[in-house]
Length: 172
Image 1 (cartoon, rainbow, N blue to C red):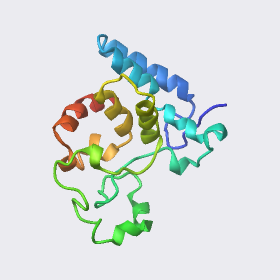
Image 2 (spheres, rainbow, N blue to C red):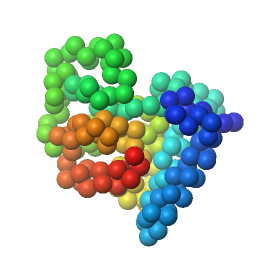
Image 3 (cartoon, rainbow, N blue to C red):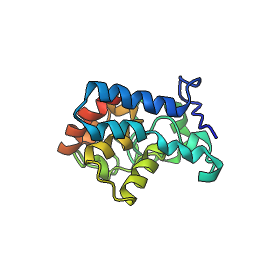
């Protein structure tokens, strides 16, 4: 069965091709970072959640932009207009810059909208991966476009996040 991500502009390309091309491009640019090659190869495998044997979840619950919940929705969120339908949008506890968080709290302490990224990161952790924390950061936040494309939410990052963001920039 083929996984189709309707939010991806490369719909003609099977997901496995995307993973192989990403891994090969990163291997070419970073030949001594074996962990990064593997990370590139597996970063989108959480999209199996679309398949009936993995739950057959709808597209909106698996693919697309991810963003923090519990604080104001940034203007750079890809489909921000739909955030207005979220009850949190008008909740004074959640609709400020920091919401329930504090400056520099670290992304590990931030609840993100659900998607294939969180799923794959959880699978790796539950299976006691030996990948470095930077790999898990890349897997979990590669669809967090507000952060790595627009620079939003940087005030939530801690020192380790700032360091790992450099690796995430490779996946743009």
